[in-house]
Amino acid sequence: MKMARPWRRMPASAHVLLLGMALCAATAVSALGQTSPRTRLVILGTGTPNADPERSGPATAVVVDDQAYLVDAGAGIVRRAAKAARDDHIRALAPNRLDMLFLTHLHSDHTVGLPDLLLTPWVLDRPDPLTVFGPPGTKRMMDLIGQAWSEDIAIRRDGLEPHEHNRDAYRSVVHEIEPGFVYQDSLVKVYAFPVKHGSWAHAYGYRFEGPDRTIVLSGDTRPTDAVVEACNGCDVLVHEVYSAARFAGRSPEWQRYHKAFHTSTTELADIARRAHPKLLVLYHQLYWGTDDAGLVKEIRAAGYTGRVVSAADLDVL
Ligand SMILES: [Zn+2]
Ligand SMILES: [Zn+2]
Image 1 (cartoon, rainbow, N blue to C red):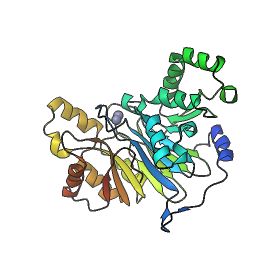
Image 2: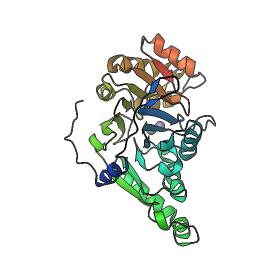
Image 3: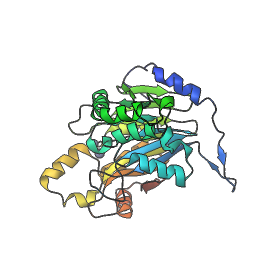
């Protein structure tokens, strides 16, 4: 794919990960003889700031073999991951294995799960610090979270809890990134691309190239050709969306906001038609009274004929 910036060097932390992931599982074969892909998308949270009890805050995992690459850290992220690990037997999502995160932008709904993701897996024996890739501002946010919980960290680290083996795993290793190639290990190559999310100076989508599938996530954005270019026939395009049909019922002030920050079903149909994903996944949905079937119907009515699903929390795709 075309990239605006030259490739960046692999971060030092990646070398450590390479060691840990040298042994890759072969493509899994089920009892029925069907092969499941090594590169999977696990939807941890499809939510928005609306506190829908059925939809945790925005968080997604690209899972390759036993490693999860988390994208965004909405409310409930660790518990959703624990449920996927337990119920779907996805070992990569066991809380003590959650050690890699890519942030699309720093909106609160995408980041309120950060202290949970930083600290809970540490308490539950994650061996290493949390590696975080994100836009400028990420380091400050992670540093301030460490400060905010400094008393808790000191009591757990230096008190009676046995953390000799992972004394420093409460820390984060932050890479503030620019669009372009941002990370590679033996399982994935990751690119960030700039998206247009209202007045945010830095908001990214991500392209994950796994051993057998390429997954592209839009992050939060109004329609942008950057998504079309990043997908360009990708296996899975995960895109945010709001209901074009219900948009008319919003106040003029909110309409102005949504147009600048987000993408309607009608607009997404056009993006997907040009991006040619093998599967289009709607997430971070704003329903305003319609439902998943309603959103898909709107995408169809706008002329998109490819495969499309409107995701629910804990879908594995
Ligand atoms: Zn946002
Ligand atoms: Zn959002």
